[in-house]
Every structure is written in structure tokens, then in C-alpha cells.
Length: 464
Image (cartoon, rainbow, N blue to C red; front, side, top):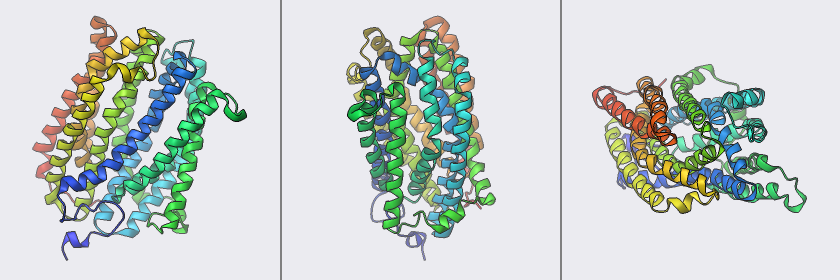
């Protein structure tokens, strides 16, 4: 039987469907994934809009100051998700349903335990880390309160995010999208309700965003589990899944082999953001608020680029699991093309309407001008970021993580942070943002060299 016929039936996209061209299969899977990531970004953006307009600029600055710290502690989860997606994708491509469920159970147990760890550690170190960041004195209290609530909801948020990665690893990007849409709608209702104290609710100020996230994502997670059970989905939470949450060390080790280097790279990105925001904080709270605004806008370009990289990794893993290594080159070419087409359109729109977009959540004219200038400097370079994400994602689909990770870390700490520091001394706040495009140029060159010179010449086997 051919590999195409051996591919299992499932909800979602079947990459081995020979009746449609690869770009179409890619696009069908990619659209719900991009929409999901855009919804996540929109949820964060709307929270920023509510804070900036219903409270003040300092409220936005308080949340922005916490972003690098939260991202740092979430990094390990991102690594585990990366590793589990590769193993689930390979197992699903090979038609091994039992292993798919076993990987999911092990990772679910690990992420729940890690969520508890983050809740404890995060609340303990939040004040110390904010002081180390030189967070402006007028916002440090609000920043600390927001951070503590975010850390405390981790035991719910982490398993929910893990489940969405499991489903995507099996080619189903639609189901996670539906429930992310639900959580976003609920968040849009809950956030202003807690800020303004609608219907007798307590007025929670900056903390409203985090409490709204707890309620909206908790409800969406419960709904997702019910939906999977009602449809008898292979990844439904049942007794077998509960037993599998007692971690299988062999599977967890295989996940960590891929996930830890990925998580380390994310941590290095987070530490770089901490270094960057410490540079930015020297220019005052208006600069900090502008930093938060620019991050919001950039996310609309960055997350679609990341989505394309994730799709390439999932499809690459399924090809390797099904022993269809001949399809890997087509996966890369399709993903890179879509990165430049989709990313190019989004960047053009953001440039054309930059003042209006930034004005959604900043009203102070001085802060608005700072944010606009920073956006002009950096936005175009995220096309290169997306290109490197595709190449590193496909290489990770085979378990090759060392050199893609080294390349990424070097571009961040060997190029971005030093460049930002040196250019800041000559160009002020603009110099901080110049480090981003410089580092993206370096990383795309490094990933391309390793991909073409070494990775393409190897034979890639399914991971044990």
C-alpha cells in the first residue's frame, strides 16, 4: 500500500491528498491557524485598548512592562509544545493512533505540573524581576498585581494551549480556532466589565485583563473537552488519557530533546526582550507604552509568519512519519512563498494605516509619535523573520534542533542586543529598534546556509 493511501482519515487537512495541489492543502490548514493566532493577538490588543482608553496610558505601560517576564516563564511550555507537535505529527503520518494518544497524555501531565510550578515561582519572583527591569516607579505596583494573576492562571492556561497543539499536530487547525474564537468573544465582554464594574462586578483595574483571560479561556477549555468527547475524537480526554498523564519518561525525553533547545531559544528571545525593555525604560513611561503599542502591531505580522513556520513543521513531521521525505522540499518552497505573499500584504496594510492602528490604544500625541517612528523602522524585517521560521521549523520536524537554535541565539545575543545598545547611544530610542532588522538579516542567512549545506543532504527518520 502506498504512503498516500496509508495516511489515516481524520478531521482537518490530509497532506497526502493527491487530488489537490500542496499550496491549497497548505492554505486550508493555514487559514484557521493564522486566524487563531490573530485572535490571540486581537485578544491582547483589545485588552490594551480597554486599558489605554478606559483607564490611562500608565495602565497600558504597567501591562507592557510585564510582557517579557511572562514570556520568559512561558518559554518552556512553547518548547514542550514544539516537541509534542513533532512527535504527534510523525506518529499521525505513520498511522500510529495509540502513540498519538500516549504522547498527548504525557505532555498534558507535564504541562499541568509545569503550570503549577510557574504559578508558585512567578508570584514569588515577580516584584524582584520588575525592580531588576527598572520598571518606572509610578507603574510598578500595578505591574506586579497583573503579573501575579497571570502566573496563577497558568495551571489552566498551559494544558489548554497544549491541547490546541495536539489537535494541530494531527492536521486539525479548525477545532482549536472555534474555541479560541469563543474565548476571544468572552474576553471582549469580561475585560471592560471588570474595568468598569458592570452589573455589580468589582472594579479590578489593570488586573481585569488577567481575570478576564482566566474566565474566558477556562470556559473555552471546558467546551473543547466536551466537544472532543461528543464527537468521539481520538484525542478526547478519557480514562486512557488520564492514565497517560502519569508521564512516560521515554516519550517525555523524546519531547524534551526537541523542546528544550526550542525553549532555550525562546528564553533567549525573552531575555533579549528584557534587555530591550530595560533600554526602553530609560526613556520614560511614554517610551514603555510605545514599546507595548509597537509589540501589539508587530504581532499581527509576526504571528502569521510563525503560523506558517508551525504549519511547515507539522507537515514536515507528517511527511517524515509517512516516509515521504521526497515532499519536504515542496513543503519548504510552499511555506516560504506564502510567507512573503501573506506577510507582504499585512505589512503593506500596517504601513498604510499605521497612525490609525496605533491610535486604537494610544491617545497621548507624544507617545503616538514615538510608536509610529519605531514601527516604521522595524516592521518590514518580519518578512525575513518568517523566512527563517519556515526553515528552522522544517528542520525541527526531523528532530534537528541544535544548529537552528544556535543560529537563532547568536542572532539575538551576538547581534540584536549589542546592536541595540550601541545604536541607542547614537540614535536614542530609534537605535534600540534598529537591532531587530539587523538580527533578522543575520538569522535568515545562517538558517539558509545550514539548511542547504547540511540538512538537505541527510536522510531523516521517524523519531523513536
